[in-house]
Length: 102
Image: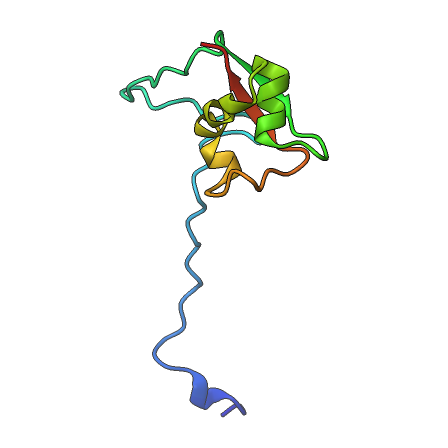
C-alpha cells in the first residue's frame, strides 16, 4: 500500500478532455453581426463637427468660437452629456466633443 493510497476513491480512469471554447472570430477581426439581427442605423455625421478640448476651454468659449455665440454652449453640452457628465463646467483637455451644425 502506497503512502497516499488513502486519497484514491473508486477505480482509476483516464482524465476526460476539457471542451475548448469555440472561437467565433479571428484575432484582429471584428465580429460579423448576427444574420437575423436588425441593422441599427448609424447617425449621419453630416450636420456635426468634432472639437478636441484644449487647456483653458469652457463650453461657452467653444460655443463662441464655433457659433459666434457663447450662449449656445447648451447645444454643445446636450450633444455631449455622455462624454462630459453631469457638470458642464468640468470639461477636460483631450475630450472630443461633437459640435452640432443644425
